[in-house]
Amino acid sequence: MLLELVWLVSMCAWRGTDALLRLVPGALMLLALRAALTGLDWRWIALSLVASFPVHLADLARQRR
Image 1 (cartoon, rainbow, N blue to C red):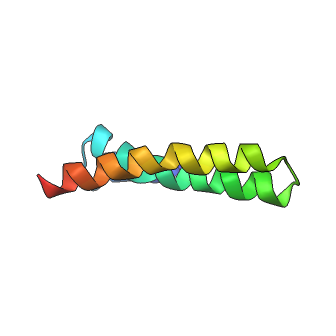
Image 2 (image 1 turned 45 degrees about the vertical axis):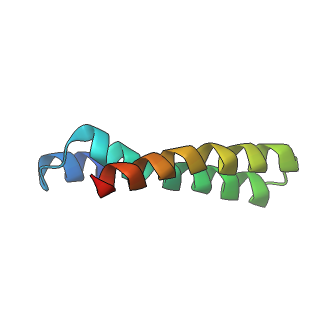
């Protein structure tokens, strides 16, 4: 995901904040998936998913403008 961030900023001329707002929710959902697959407590899975939601909403609000 770090390589994707570098590619979006350098090659596609995205601003860093735009690229981060698009990638962070996905990274948090991948973290939740990893927690689920490794058998961590459900609270860790829920925490990752809940943390991704406000960032996703911020991305949607930024796209609307």
